[in-house]
Length: 164
Image 1: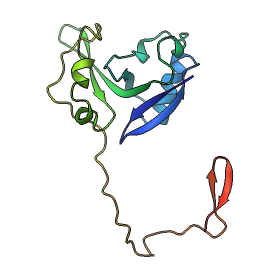
Image 2 (image 1 turned 90 degrees about the horizontal axis):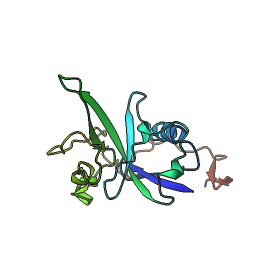
Image 3 (image 1 turned 90 degrees about the vertical axis):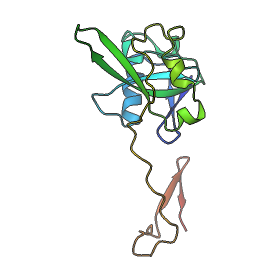
């Protein structure tokens, strides 16, 4: 039983959901290189949040995540108003989600889909993902590239293959 977590520049992470929620949560944060202080969540393609950080520690992820489904990694930003009322805002950590699925954030903030959402949808979500690095030209000088040693092996499927 596994899920696919989509994040970054259309990166995909395969995760086992036959584990406790906290184990899955920490694994995703670590493998997707999130900051220690970041709070994350998952949303399915319909915008339904899975509330990973609010799940009981003993609950297994397979109880609320669908095996073989694809989920979008979300960053949760918590804030308090002057009265001490906590609110959450959500930011997708998958670049281009708004271009490919323009209604996605409206669905995330839809009270019928996610009744626990406390804020209204932002007018425009700006991603905290680093900007795309320019692709280097394939015509690089020999001094700019490092060649693999002649005895280097490429690990493919657990079997070392010699590079030529």
